[in-house]
Length: 489
Image 1 (cartoon, helix red, strand yellow):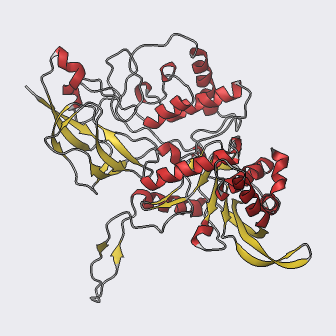
Image 2 (cartoon, rainbow, N blue to C red):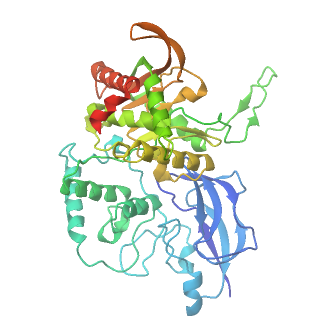
Image 3 (cartoon, rainbow, N blue to C red):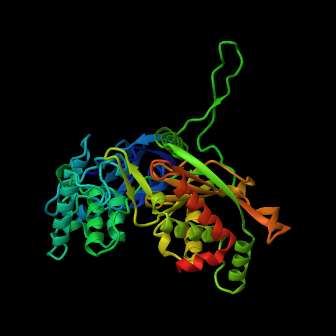
């Protein structure tokens, strides 16, 4: 006799608690295979295809396209065949839904209203869907290595040391107690086997903070600079077509006077996440802005010469990013964040450069990892890849988080200047206006030159105006004389 199993919206990581159904990929009556994507959902950070852990016939779908569901709400039901030993492996779930959402428990268990917690242990242990807490370095929950000596940090160091010692030991068999796809991706990208970890979450659940603690300890052990924390996604103004509303617009009721009050646009999804981020930045960060005009004629000539030499074309954004990383090496105060609970400024050892991209879904800010270690050609390729993913809605949550400094090119909108809002909890953002011909005194003579306005908004807690002015002046010098960058090669 067939059994009907209920598949619920899984935890999508990054502390997200709801998602909007964008497009159903199956209909009632369709036959689905284990791990087949069944629905495309949009969170505040990305669009994700959600695979179903069961194989069988779809008997019901919950929610129309455009409906917002909380994590743990039913998505669909699937009728699977009798639970014979031969069919068990086929219909019993893959154990790997959304790169780390376990499904190895028996079908009668899956129909419980509240999923069982993840349990570390031998093969056949149950895996549920508790929501992993979001890792926010600025709120003091976890500080970067070398930023203090609290009991929490000592415990984290001890935990990391134990894990590092285990990495050479034989690995245990059985499922890994992880539910967040981001935790698995972070471990996979850094060649960390999750089987050597004992999680700090409920019943041994491995959290993102557990992985990051080990990676920081590895960095210290290898003698490299430690403390490159993973930060929440940045926000800003940027490139691309004009934004379009991401949610249906519904008429508001009439006012008591009898005339329409206008329309109401829900602040949800990406638009809601941006609104929350900007409001928090203004509320918590005492920012200040300085700006300067620069003659970009030589920078434009240098780019033209690079592209005329053959090979992949170099973008202007890549050259500006190269200037930013060189400036941050000289003024590391601006590549940091403030740990308000510990009352500490945490300087970061790596530059993960965010850049804003305007898409049909709204504003997103992809992050170029380790931008300080890339040349102009590599930066150009990564900017192009992330921009294309942003416009097609295929950016992963991991590609939208972790920025330590933001480059904001609002010149494409035809404006000269701006006072951008800092991407909380970062410490600064560089804004670049349009580059246009203007009268300029060059070598003692009035000439028409390509001029750009540069603006720097910075957190006044991490540095004073002298440091901010020095950073901005160095950026302007590199724009005016690109040969200055040769000193850092």
